[in-house]
Length: 125
Image (cartoon, rainbow, N blue to C red):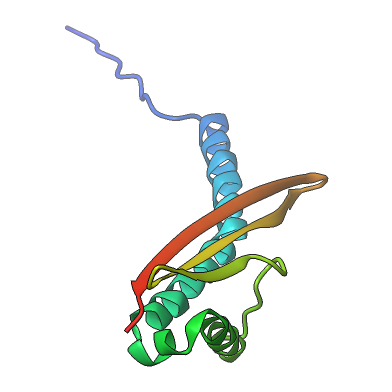
């Protein structure tokens, strides 16, 4: 008579706990960084709309900058730094550069710095 004992194999409690701890750590990082990326997407949307609108482009760099600031107020957003939006015109091409960084507190005295640089160009009508 053959006696075969089958031993169960699988993850132990400690292995499962380790996976949960690592997953929780990664999710907490993702949830803390997510708002910075959502805000950047909104900034991008506002600037693309402004650079594709011929009426906005006819206002010139100062008008575009003022219009973008008004649209950001409507979206309840502020530019993180004072000089983060630069709009200028050169040879009939209007260029808008959005360059800023966001500092996100992570854990204790550890911060994450997320840098965004977007450039937009359009021809004057």
